[in-house]
Image: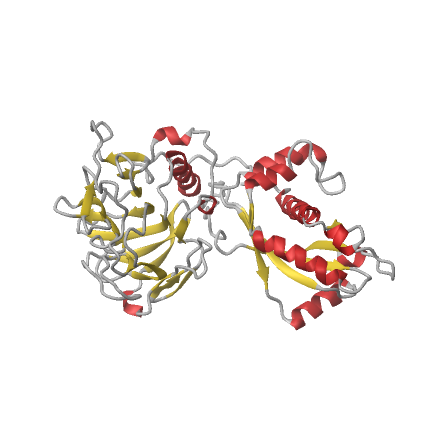
Length: 481
C-alpha cells in the first residue's frame, strides 16, 4: 500500500517520464526552443505571443476505483472497534496540454508526449524508484525532499501497478472543464492513472483465532525477500482474470469476465446463456469477491485465444486460486487435454488435482497430486511445463511442488523434449472440459467446476522458480484475510 503522498508521487513520476521522453527524442532541437514540463493548474500558465513551448500535466479529478472499492470491508465491528484498514483506492484523472506560440509546435509536442504514454502504459517500480529515490529529484516545490525515499518505497511496492490509459472526452465535457478553469483552451489529451492504494496505518482489534487457515501457502514465502510483482510484470502473460475487476454481472450471474492481461484483442471469458452463468459473490476471500460455479452447468467460454499449430507451446504456466468442498470430478480451465492442456481440481481415476498435456506427437501425459484438495479451503494451484527441462512438467499447490515427487531420482520426463499442441484447433473454457474447435463450441468432459474462483493466470512461458515465487507472494499479499 501507499502513503497519502502517493497522489503527488504519481504526478511526479509522470512528469519525470515526460521530461525524459522529450530529451530522448531531442524535441528541443526539433522545435528550436527550450521545452519545459510543468504540473500546475491551467489558469496559472501565462500566455503571450512569445510563449516558449510548454507541456503541462494537470490532475483535475480523483475518483474511487471500482475494483478495489469493497476490499477489506467491513472495517468496523458492531461495537465500533476497528477490524481492518481497507485501502483508499483511487483513480487519478489528468489533462495533458501543449502550449506554444509558433505554428505546429503544440501539435509536435503533444504527439511526442502521447507516444511516450502509449509506449509506457504502466508506472514501473524501477521508474518510481528512479524518480523518487534518495535524494529526491522531485523538487522542493512538489514534495518534501526528506519524504522522497519514503514515497518511493510505498508507491513502488504497492501490490498493483499504476496503469495509464487514454480517456475519451466529449467536446461538451472539455468545454465545461476549461470554462471552470477560467483558462484559454489549448490542444489537450485526457489520461487516467489507476490504481493508487492509500492505506490507513491505524491499530486494529485482533480477531478471534481461527481453527483452520483459509488460504494455505508455504510458510517460507511469507517472510521471503523476493520482490512482490504484479502478474503483468512477468513476460508471457496471455490471460489474467481477476474477480474484483472487469466482471459484468446481474441477478442471472456473470455475463463477462474481462481479461486484464493487456493483450489486443482481449481474451475475455463470457457466457451468453443466462441459465449457465456462474454467480457473483461479493465477499469471499480477503474481502474480495469470487465467481461461484454450481457444478451442474455453469461455465465461461474464452474469446480470441486458441491453439491451432503443432508444437505451439514450448513453455506454459497456469495458476488458479480456487475453493471447493465437492468431491465430484471438476475442471478449472481447459483447452482439451488430448490436443493442448487441462487443469482440473478433480481429475482421472484417483480424482485428485490433474495437470494434463498433449504434445506435437499427440502423446497425452497426465500428472496427478498425491491427495485431493476439495476440503473447503482456498488453494493456489499451478501447472507448469518447460520443453526439454527435467522434469518437463510440475504441479505446485500452495507453493509446494506436489508432483512429480521432488525426491524422485532421476526426475521423470513426460514429453521427451517435445513441445505442446497437436495442431488441432482448440478454444478454451473456464469451469468445464473443452473439445471446442470454435469459440464456445463443443464441451467435454462435462466435469463442471463446483466452487469459488477468484483469479486465473495463463503464461505462454515456463516461469522460472523466482518468477513463480514472486507470483505466489503476490497472491499472499493480495488475498490473505
